Image (cartoon, rainbow, N blue to C red):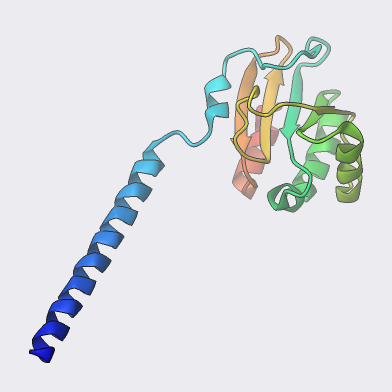
Length: 163
């Protein structure tokens, strides 16, 4: 009798484990098909921030957050991007949910030079995660969006989009 109960318990454990794996895999596949970044929906539309976009062919907008480790890991690319934008006489803006002075200090610790730093409400900008990088044209329309720490391939795409 005890052996039979052990066998039934083992079968129950196996069934629960299989069902758990099934639901985890199903949820992962379902989530993969959902758009993860609502910022992508802004492509081709007016960027929801009051800014004079006209003096520059393109403006790079970085949505960052103080203490974001992906932002910190992306700092070498942002330094390179800042230099690239400056040499091409384009503009760069950093947006943070934190106060401007705290945000500027954070950029200084990362050695990232951004001429304009502003506080912004990320939900208004459709930013669901940091870092998020936008390229805005002179009409204020979103040309491209990237989210997260960028691979070297994606970094090259950003630079190419500014050409």
